[in-house]
Image 1 (cartoon, chains in turn orange, purple):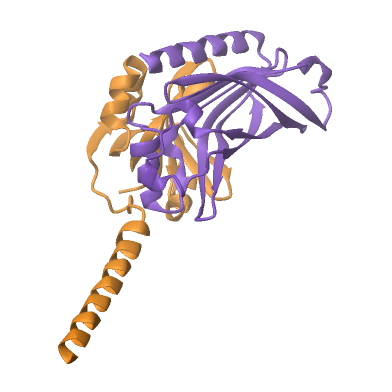
Image 2: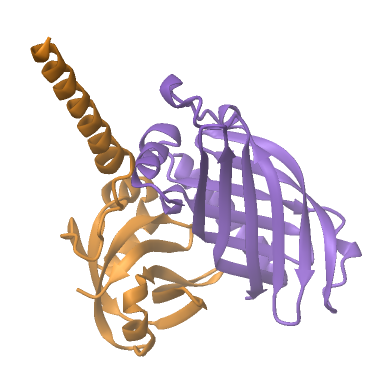
Length: 144
Length: 183
């Protein structure tokens, strides 16, 4: 009788531990830390934009969902909202104005980003989420 | 091929829009969706919406990368991209259409106008004609366009695996909110 109680106790503890693991490490696992993530690819910002212009499907397969380290000459900084700062690189004038690469910065890089001026050579790391028809989008961006 | 077709379409519309030069646009519009079930509510936000409105003709377009939808839970975001919308194969969603009766709106002074928008919404490999209501708020230096409508995932070939069927609503509320500025 005592042995059965011990077995049941062990099973109960194992079940609780399994539920804990599933909830915290699978169901509620945190988003990837893109600031600390190692880049999957390094590419010039202009080459990235040209890749999407020349063959969007192939570029999407190559770059979407990847952490990219890009470099290029900054065209400007835009404070879109209180919680959203975008660095952008323009490589062409299209139907909707300047087209290129837009990098949405992580909040803790806003201050540094807002101090930057057009013409600076910069390196930015971020997650490539796709192409809007005018711009390649990088999000969760940081200065390495 | 679909991406090239979409790109060509949007550029042609852009050409037409730009030729008339009454274009207002944004590169950071917002689209949210909300799913409500007894088990859980799921919300996602996309702030990378490229959108343009021609105030002369009423032509209205938006296009967004599906991977830019941000979820509270990382696991939901993974399921959304990998299993539901298959964003690796169908990376964008797009709407191209028209605000009807645009000539009745006075864009020269501030005000709020209820509008009807009709056009084609493309998600994954499905394009459907939709007709929805919305609101245009005319401000001195921008136009804010807002609309809330319902999308049925099944209608756009978004198959929800049986094990998630109780967690995801059959009707998803989609909210569009874009602040458009003169080009």
